[in-house]
Image 1 (cartoon, one colour):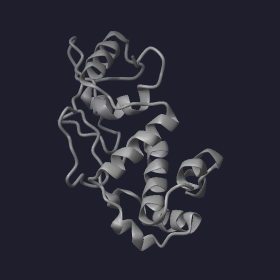
Image 2 (cartoon, helix red, strand yellow):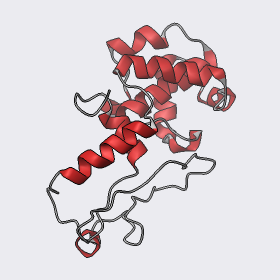
Image 3 (cartoon, helix red, strand yellow):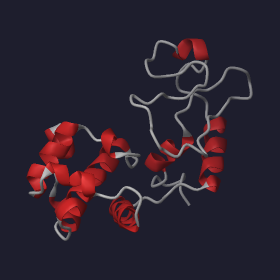
Image 4 (cartoon, rainbow, N blue to C red):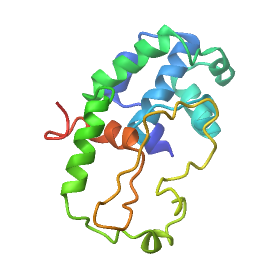
Length: 175
């Protein structure tokens, strides 16, 4: 936990210019993005222990996270700063289509039948989507999709928007 949630030299340049709830919120969503490859949909997705630890690092009370606005221009600006730091950008529908074509053209490295994937916890055999550990209350799920192989068995793929969050910066997948 400490290695994943500790701020390193590159983090402090952006965190250091913020104060209060904005400082804690920015630090937490930045590290969450680094670990998960996406932004949290709601504050409860961030582990309580991480909030406590990060608050001690940035010298802000953990309770101040309740004052961080999850639906504001501030968080959008913070997300833009974080994307810039990591060299990524939001995925577009065109990215989804290109990734779907790219994935469909590649031979699968592992078994792709639904029955072969059933032993993996967290994977819904009925939809081929990865289930979240916690329900995504208020999350935006429009645009998520799965890719199916035309030859028969369904290919279980994590929702494409989450894959793109991790792959868009890789040469050949982004624009």
